[in-house]
Amino acid sequence: MIRLSHTAMEALTVCERKFQLNRLLTSSFSGPSANPNFAFGHSYEAGCVEFLLSGNKDKAIWKSYMAYSGEDEYGIVIPENSKKNEMTAINLVQASFPHLENLLEEWEIATFAGKPATQLSFRVNIDETFYYVGYIDLVLRNRFTGRYAVLDFKTTGLTLLVLDPLYQNSGQLIAYSIVLDEIVGPELSSYDVIYFVGQLGAGNGFQPKVSTLIFPKTLKDRLNFFISLGMDVQRLAMMREYGIFPQRGGACLQYNKPCFHFGTCGLHSLDKEKVFEEDTTEYQFTFSLDQIIEHHLERT
Image (cartoon, rainbow, N blue to C red; front, side, top):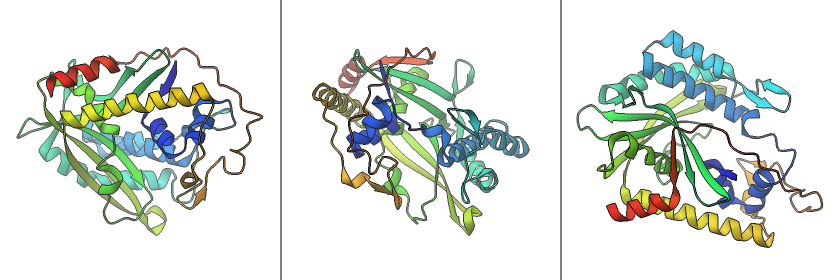
């Protein structure tokens, strides 16, 4: 079966050929974990989660430092550049402490099976070929209203004053919220998604800005997402059947940098289907897409 994720589906909607090269074919693409963006974000998340769990700043900094790494074909690497490196990641975690303390005044970490609801994994079986997976950073519960929220940590080098357009309509946490049914029961009708965002800012990463973005969502938002996921996979299956994956010019340049495949994506002589191995990961939650849609139709 072929593994899909939020990142994979975003790539599909931006450029189908890029998705094919990165996800379906054997290529020299090194994967998301061998670059500074992944290592930086992973380090920031580890430090913030530890602080929310323990309240210990020193331990949070140590966790952030130890988590700054990635992998390539040769093993563990420390990918970094002038703005995204171990020191700027730790600095961003430190700048986040007051904001995390403010978050804890209103929210507490939910529990699942007697443990904090953090780093939860799930799998949605779509059909015989594709399945969708996700990993949830944290599930929170409002101390005053009892309302639940799914939280995700993000980092960005953009200097935007208003970050809402980046995250408000993202489907990532809408998909992840499916786990809430298993934690709090199917009677849940509305919830929040929270993006805790660390911006590098100016000063080569040493003048950061931290924002907490909270967006309310409904069961209808979740239903629409899963129906859209099924539609996207149907289109993907059709492209595989016909062997046609369009190139989208809008994806050739992103963040003022050319795509990794630019200049060679039009060459097909070396295209070779990737052999997909069985996924032996033990996900904490497993769902069927058809059952999710049917269940949500009943509830709405």
